[in-house]
Image (cartoon, rainbow, N blue to C red):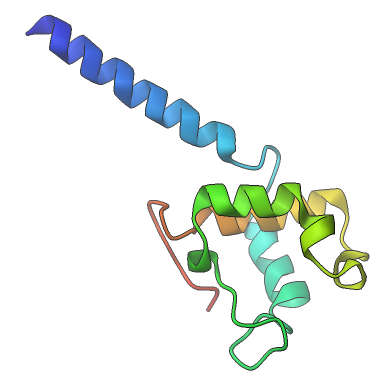
Length: 108
């Protein structure tokens, strides 16, 4: 019985660490939400030219993959005024409230 409890605990710890590795290191989700609303929501709302995009649109890993290749996947003009820290903050906000997070949310 003790062995299975230890195994279960070990698996839980691995899951926690694996998930935290995906998160954007150094990002501030509160700033990210503000930056997202200010810089991204104009194009990424229901009527916007970029299509509606909210944190729940993607999973945590999908958001991380997107931000690792953001220069290839996004119009350069749209992100040219955002610093690397700004992008980390936006990534952290989207990651923290993604579809498979503990607290999925829209941007409203």
